[in-house]
Image 1 (cartoon, rainbow, N blue to C red):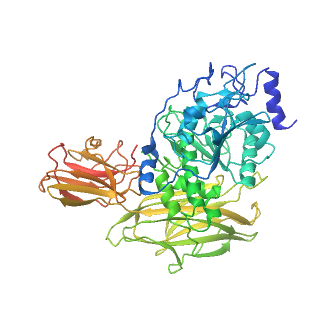
Image 2: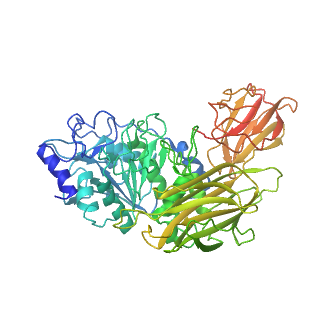
Image 3: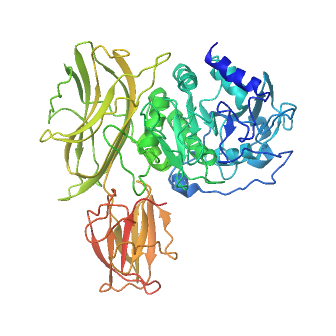
Length: 603
């Protein structure tokens, strides 16, 4: 008997439907919503808007800033899907539907699917309303609080129908971005293979809740080719690595309606829809197919994420076991897409296991601007052979003209588990100093199809970012297509006197910085001034300090953030190595400040 038969047989033997079981009765193969650690939805009739919390948190993902500096990025033209685990049980109907009157989505832009039938009406005979589906929809595409408020269409599936009638049998769908706020409640590599094959064949991006809080990452979030989402504002977010050693989750986000992965996941799905819209309309360049490939979208989302306090990785484990690449920030990801496609400077092969040669004067793939900013992406192919490894070299000139300046550097490499394959090609990502040939950082996991490099304090210089592919008998195929996203930046605050006021400003992008204050440099003394709310003016955050005295306090600009406190201040409660410190006289009669500084993270 095949695996799906085993799954269904267990459920049938229990005398229960595939979905909607109380977890006290549930079999590990159940598909269940991710709204609670202890029970799934119960007692739901036709609820309308009752029991639905509408809590907008756009600033936690950089959405407010993105909307302020761009035009009409709202998911327009992107077809999305929302499979929902049913809350029904026994003889009750399937409760999986998102009520358009609650989410604000026009009824003619949502279709409901269950058990071989569909309906464009609400209510309908296919099932009933789910407040879980309502909350997911509010965060994903809901009006006005969703991330992608103008998607072309939403296909709302009963999750059992979606898994067994579409994914398992490889039946095509219209949607490109799939939000999956449900879980199998266990890790099944054979079920993950269904999703990986489907993603590889149809180019759809599965974005899945990582699982229940305080539990490991479960299927289908554990598939290779999708994105597993944890929840940042819960210390018990699902954790990795997977049983096969892979790093999951991939990313985290704020849990809006509750501190669970059901409601962090749609924030990432909405961000993916925005990036897909932006790629389709040419914001990333003329190669729109590459810009909207699921590997590119995944690389951009992970590379734009903000590192929370305590984030770490290793060459063998590219992502943090709880935070993944960090906290999703759609502004950062969009700006990296808008940085354009950058081809490698040169490619070559070396004997298997031999380190490649660094060439200092090879063609550049990019150069930082006058402010020390460089970002972008690439979608390309690398080819190795039975006798040689392959390397694609991306050379970058990194400087802002200021002696001693340092830069924050992030790079992410993504490729797929290929169709009907059980193993991946072995790719790695390495950052070398091209002037002296020294390795700066690398990501060389042998089991992941994501590599991630993060360097918070990179000196100015010339660098070689290498995408490598191992050759030899272990190859799945000689050729592998991959996506690469990268970012180099340094950030400082500027001050300018305006009449008797002092205006402090800093760039909107890179996102994730905020102004904090202290009366001294003692660790843990930094707080967010409640009466200094920044406003966005011409792509800059601005804060006005009235009646300043140039002999009083100082502004401290912190450009780079790592995992430990910086010299003179910092500590366990304070993220960041402090560099590029700029001291400027400042005073504000209305607030008890002695020092101001910028820092990440902003959550």
